[in-house]
Image 1 (cartoon, rainbow, N blue to C red):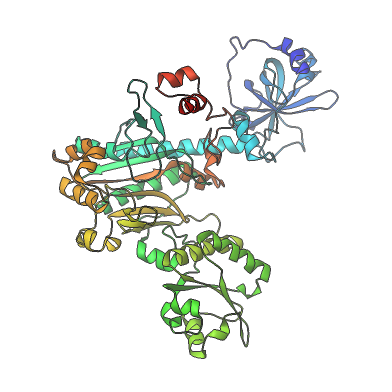
Image 2: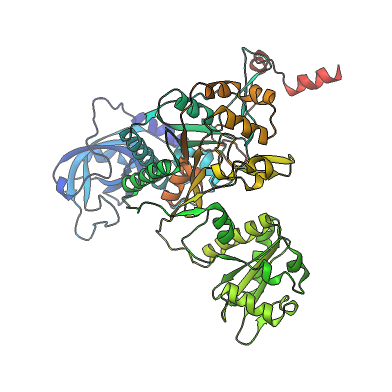
Length: 605
C-alpha cells in the first residue's frame, strides 16, 4: 500500500489521448506506424536498460519497450511500473529482433517502442495472478470476481456467451419474432421449484414472486396476437444447486402460434445451427435425430442420453425371473451393462463404482467378469448354464469384458446404471473430443407420481398439452398419459425444453383436475390465465433454452459459474457482495416485517 501511495504521484489524466488499436491487433503490416495503446500491465521485465512490459486489454497482449536510448524521458520513470497498473502509451511499431519472435502471441512478430506514456492508475498486488495458469480456488476467484474476469479465459467465455446471444437474437429477428419483456415481480404459483418471494411495502402481508420462467406471460402474448415472441429472460428458482444450476439463470425463451411439434423443433434446429456457426465457426448437420422418452430410458437409463458413445443398458428381467439369485428373481426390473475390456478393473475400482451408484438409491452393484474359461463373480453360482448363456447373448459378452447389473425399482435401476454409464464413459476415455451430438427426446410422460405429495404432478408444467391418443388415460391411468413435450439434448446435457401448450379452457380444467385442483383453487391461482383462455386462444407452443448451459458446453467449462459474470456459490451466496445479507430494521418495518429478535420478544410477551 505504501508503494501504491508513493507511485500515485505519477498518475496523469488521460486528457485528449485516444486509443488507436487494441492489444491484439498490431502485426508486421503495422511496422513503422505510430500508435496509442491502453491497458493493464501483465508482466514487467527489467533487463538493466531496456524495460519490457506486456500490456493487456480485453483482446490480448502487446509487448512494449522502454528504451533509454530512443526515449530517455519515457524510460526515466518506467521503473515504477507494476502488475495491473493501468497505462497509456504512445510509440512506434517495429519488428522484433531475430530470434525474439513469439509465435504464441497474435502480436508476437512486433513490439512497440514507447515514445511517451501516462500512468493512469496504480494497483494493489492482486490476491492471485491475473492469468489462466492461476491455481486460485473458485471461492477466492468469486470473491475477487472483477479481477478473475480480467483473465483471458474468463473474458473469452463472456465473449462467447455474447456471440451465442447475438446469434440467437439475429436469427429470431429474421424469422419475425418480437422481443418482449415480461414482469420480474409476479404471482407465486404452485408446481415446480420453490419461488423466491419479495414482500410488498404497499400491500402488507402480501408477496410478489420472482418468475421461475415467463410461462404464463408468453402464452398470454400468443393470446394477445403477437404470434411470435422471444426474450432473453432472467429466471429464478429456489432449489439446491449443482455445477449446471444457479438460483438466477438466463433462458432464451420462445413461443409461436399456429404450430405443431415439428414446426418448433425445425425452428430450434435452425437457431442452434446459426449459433454454432457464428459463435464457434462449426457447421452442425440438421435435422437432429429423434428418440422417444421410453426408448431413451430403456437403452440409456436417463432422459438426456449422451449418444457420443455406445454401451447401452439391456433388460434381462425375463431371463433371471426364475433364477436362484433371489434379488434378481423378484425384482421389478433387472438391467445389465457391458464394458468392453472391463475385466481388467481392480476390486478397488469396482468398489468405487459401487459407492457411486449408492447416490441413486442402489444398495450395491452386481458384476461379472468374463475370463477365458470361467465367469468371475460372487453371483454366478446362482445361475444355471442356460441362464448364463442367455445373459451372455443378451449383453453380447466376450472374454475380457465386465458386466454390471442393477435390480429393483425401475427408477433406481435406470438412474444408477444410466449415470454409471456416463461415469465410465468419462473415466475410460470412450467419449470422443470435439464432437457435438444433438438429439431430440420426445413423448415424455405427462405426469409423474410424487411420493412426497402422494399425488400425480406435472412432469413439465400444468400447461403442457396431452398427446391426443392418450387423452383418455389422464383419469384412468395417468402414468401412461403422454405429453406433447420435447427436449433438446447436446452431449448428454438438456439444453432446451418445450411443448405444445393447452389452448382451450376445457382441456386446461381437465389438466387441473388431474393434478388435484378444484375449480375454486384453480381460479384462485390461475384465474387471470383461465379467463384469457376463454377469449379465442390460438394453438401455440414453444421452447426455452438454457443460455448458461449452452455457453458452458461451447466453452468447455466445468461449471456454468465460469460463463456467468457474477454467479452465486453452491450455497447461493455472492462472495463479492456478501449477498444475501441482513436488512435495516426500518426497511423491514416498512414492509410489515420484524427482526428475529423482535419476533422472539413478541412471542415471549
